Length: 425
Image (cartoon, rainbow, N blue to C red; front, side, top):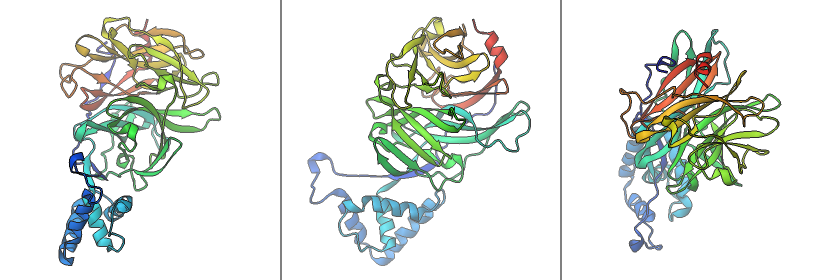
């Protein structure tokens, strides 16, 4: 199937210059810990030992350094000071300048995509005004990996047209640190209020369940039964030991709600939500046995139990395991599902299948061969021999497929939906 896809020359690679400011907490090792003299307080004491000139110089240096790639540095640091204030003594009477210096010692600049930028998903943007015939405005999510192999989510905008292919807007030089506005009833509300472009909004781990990463967001443009549209996405929350599925709701891609999924099927990764209810119920693809693609249904968006096997390994390129490559895509012919299969030497390939539109538990057809394999020119990276996507879309009978290569970078391909369906049996 080497002639099925049209490949783009556009590659999105990690940029270590893109950073956010995040909390930096410190304490002594257990054997040296002394609650009467906590380490953070020792740092404050050293700051307070500076004379006025020294303090002024330190303040000026840190503001100048951070202002090169962060907006409203003083507001950001003052919020950090308020976060640590209750843990410190002798700070209530500090000047604003001293508070900002103290806050800087308990903050760190974090390069959230220094090591990798991959596993993208793509959706059509809400605003398509002014687009030429055949052109569509798109929004992407990507997984970035930074220091400590911690995964975050970042976004890009762009367009696609039959004439010019994919064009991705240059990301902003700024990135906005998310603010946890509220956390109650397992719902965490994140705000990137200062974001002036989708590429400035960054979601890095803020809850215990996400401590080691927010992985592989599968964005979906979900249409409610009344026609309202909202952007949802399942992702994997990883705490360093356990992985589980959670749900993201995005409002303008400046405000986000993050909520754990419940039920027996949620204690796994790789879930993908259908873009609308089917027969009055939410539907979801899962992979709770780490081998097969499962179909689940629920009356509620956040609770998922049971399910039934839907697609199982049949061909050599998927003998080890299968999973989805994002939410199903609705066609006149049925639900198009992009799949991934794992074969020899842990090669990850991408295939596709078609489900019945009225009853998605019925598998109508599938590709015998992968539609996308690791290429000899693009097989090397952090995890070699892997191509993987977290979600594609269809525009005017053309499949738009962003995908990650070797857990390293992202690129793009497109294909005629009609030609793709002809390859299925």
